[in-house]
Length: 82
Length: 284
Picture (tube, each protein chain N blue to C red):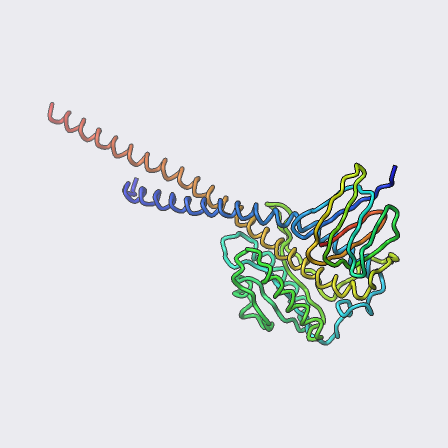
């Protein structure tokens, strides 16, 4: 079974996504970042683009981010600020 | 029963009108409170997460990373930003935060403090104060407006970054629940590091450029949070004070109605007494 990690996608007016996921793809300013569980601590600036989240059940969530934002990965927990 | 019944009736009518007005104001405040409270409760965890991210990122050593962390020149004046309401009838909401601000000014009287005031009530109070008022923001009426918020934080950060002031403090009211609102004073700038252990992040593109974007964003969110906390407190305070006013009017009305009935009954008794006694007299 694939390892999962926690992802939270937040904007200032709502919680967009929260839950355990298998993989996360986020558009950083230097290019797309693919993230799996047990990633090293990472801080990144995000540009606009598609955020793709794959959950354990195999469903894929695609979030269109129109503005930039930030991504933090710490203790197997990814937090995205849009 | 000295008062003529007409006068009592007039008083009853005027108290009834007051009760209607305060009742309506209470319902308006409740509606506004609910709306702004929802906004606040969503923003609060977001702001907290963003703040902890920022503190993780800057770690213990920070001064060279960005101008926002450098403590200002000691001789330069500091700024106190005070958030009050524009309209009254909200209990002790304004008094509490203004008392705290006044205490802060008294305690730091050796320093030069300039004021930035949000809300008419604060302006009225500090207009005659010896401190210089740099700017005042009026007409928000406890409604959150993004452009107002951006303007305020824009001015505050510009003052600090240009070195005109050495620190920015902000006095506002934290909403704890609808009965308790706590006035507080916080140092907004320079940003104080809360985190002593450094997390080794892989930074993309690099730490400096992330912070250059993150800190203005953080300040914006922080200001938004401060305004929402204050406005929510204001609506809560107004709801409570209008409820008290309505309840008092109700009590007053009860007493007045009872009094009116007594006076009326006394009049009737008097009349009957007069009729019967005159009938007796005629019989005799």
